[in-house]
Length: 431
Figure 1: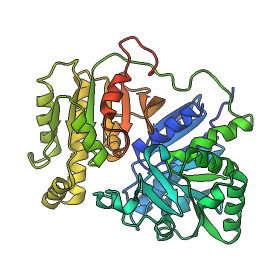
Figure 2 (figure 1 turned 60 degrees about the vertical axis):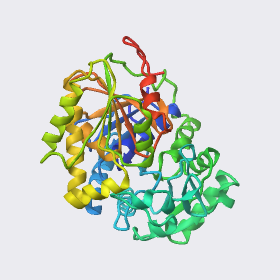
Figure 3 (figure 1 turned 120 degrees about the vertical axis):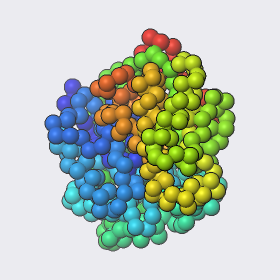
């Protein structure tokens, strides 16, 4: 059996990391997610792929690059052959960073001169056509993402967006080329590299396009994009005779116990999911207490009124007008930090109360929760919805299942589906 992983990935948030991990598991790769840059002496173990999840999406570009380089150094030490920089399928990033600066730093550290950039994820309605990112039928800047509280996206042209962030030139591999298949894509990317471009935005409107793009990038040291473009990566390794089948890569331990949902995302998708959950629900008011500890105590007192075996939902999610009012009162950064800290404390309190299965909605919220719980590694299981698996917290103080959901992911019934995926006590695999 091979002693080192094949693929090393760096994700700029926690839910994005589990999204990528699920794509790799679906491709037959045994995958785990490391929480933060691994510590000295930590090993990859018996895996085909490792995803290092950072909380760098909204960090200053210099800090995001530094953490990403530290993650890359560890992934190289444990023997990875190819590397992946995972960011959101809605390209969440301001003109000040972080996608371009981090990609620049990774390319330079690897001694490479070119990488593709493709955030497309058709299964979740994200497609790229003529370099423009669509969410469903709407351009990115008309999809609601223009109102994102941290990374408002006001330009759908990814060639322009990435061009404003990087020190290298950005070109386009348009759909007419992509439709011709992997060889044509590879030739087009080579031509852009030869012309001095550092990046290629690559169009994709279907999974077949993503498979062809992945095939075309088999020899690339670094691939950048959303999780969708990773669909072809496992098959590349399989064709090379490097990936062997060794049981189900998605098999997880299954601790018995109650479940809870914690939602911090203010995306339209998450707001709809909360409305459709039909669960006992507590909506946290960030203006009702002086600090995170007080807000958490209020929510936990409410939770204590419900039977321990009944699922419940605690949310700080709010529509845009309410978010604006909270930010005006507290400050944008201060409001975000307060909510993250409070929800993380709530998660800790619920686990102490006996919760063993948590669904967490929102990338920033997920990062705060896993940090507070002291989780260092998640084994990736099978799919709840496109981009979202159940995961098992390996090496934790208590057995714990986590589903970390990007705010925009999942249908209206996502929370119901997540709970329905859980087998009864004594099960071994998330079905």
